Image (cartoon, rainbow, N blue to C red; front, top):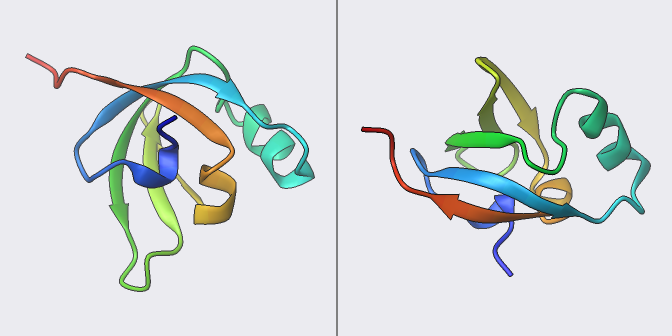
Length: 79
């Protein structure tokens, strides 16, 4: 299964399922990273961590380890 950590810059995806065992992941869900949410992968830092995503018009950052807890489905690019 594809996770947020595997997306490339500019790719769109919808969150399909979440491994909620990590309390940090639960905090990210409060920010809107929930099943059905659509995100755009913006970039990863030079070292590969953290990752930056666009979610509901806002940019959020998360660690790669946490991004692996979000299983996603790629979406076609906008228009």
